[in-house]
Image 1 (cartoon, rainbow, N blue to C red):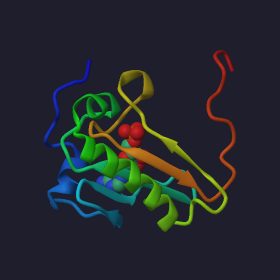
Image 2 (cartoon, protein in one colour; image 1 turned 135 degrees about the vertical axis):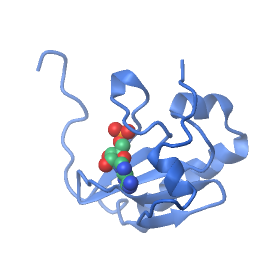
Image 3 (cartoon, rainbow, N blue to C red; image 1 turned 90 degrees about the vertical axis):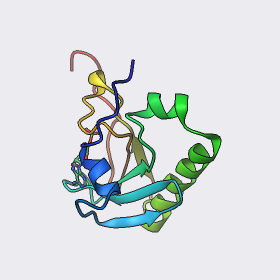
Image 4 (cartoon, protein in one colour; image 1 turned 180 degrees about the vertical axis):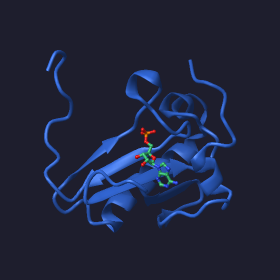
Length: 124
Ligand code: AMP
């Protein structure tokens, strides 16, 4: 069950221009910028401009136009930063079990090095 959208989350402030970001790409419905605390040589975030808490919220409520724009923006952003050359990982934390920190949908694009296994197995 998604929580109510918090208009004061950090990505909402970026979208309103209240705090800066290192922009990579922008479309009608999406914005991509560098993560402030990169975990890989390439670490970019892609967010929809609409007020969606997480992937669950977006997939249920966004228009077809917003969804198409967002998917295209993710792929285009990966090409702009050169992540397509050797491959990349997309990750979107959704809610409590995924430790989502910022409650505005974002897809991480990681690349620029070998990223290892996806997850540890239970008990490791
Ligand atoms: P998540 O755990 O998936 O919610 O990840 C949130 C991400 O947002 C983290 O990787 C943070 O480093 C990143 N982040 C937080 N504040 C900012 C900011 N002002 N600009 C860019 N990235 C940010």
